[in-house]
Length: 302
Image 1 (cartoon, rainbow, N blue to C red):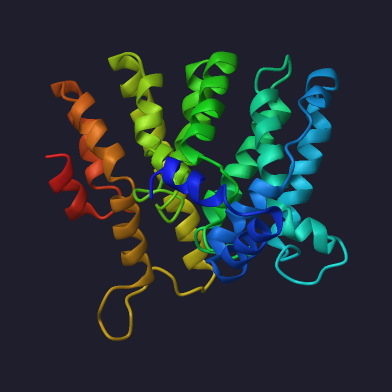
Image 2 (cartoon, one colour):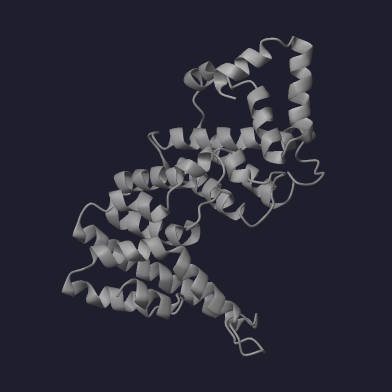
């Protein structure tokens, strides 16, 4: 049915019949369908409060920090006295409101608290792909949180406020930590339609060959930091990075391969923008970096 046909059908139903239809859809539908119905039934927040009473950035940061900490502790998944039953069912609204307030606070006079708040929310959203913090089949979609948009807003603020060197130093480890070649949702909703790679979000901020070159150098430094952290973990006897007993891939081999593929779009952009012969050393260092799959990278940036 199209919309007109649908409206014609439901116009013959009274209020009680409509409630029964909606309840059937809610009760027998998928978890994602129930979430959408709940979102439609929740009244929107009053816009006047936001206009008249802008949030204190420090208080906002405290709220975000507490929310993220409780989520990681499993407080929204299990019976935890720190989070009421009502709040556990409304986590999507809480996440959405905090994200909206953090983005607005990026335009405040002091943006530092909002920068920290947004970084924590993006970290949590990225973790939600692999860790079940909330009762949802697709939590990032349920929260209506577009990771690439949030990262772009954060990076633009840092670049404008602190300049290129500080921006490159902060954004490169975030790019490594946050990038996802397949997005952050299950790919079936409106949020998924708006998602881009972080490489695509980052590219417009690098407005000159010098910026691409400088950012590439900072990116290599961030990869070096990852390599040092992995070496330190291996040195503590974790066994990571060693060959498997069967002679196959080790955990480190898998991480290198996965990291290179996750950042494939970014590496392709670097190869395109660092085409000058003077950039060959940067690309050579990237192609042989120990935390990435060298064979895959060489084929990519050839």
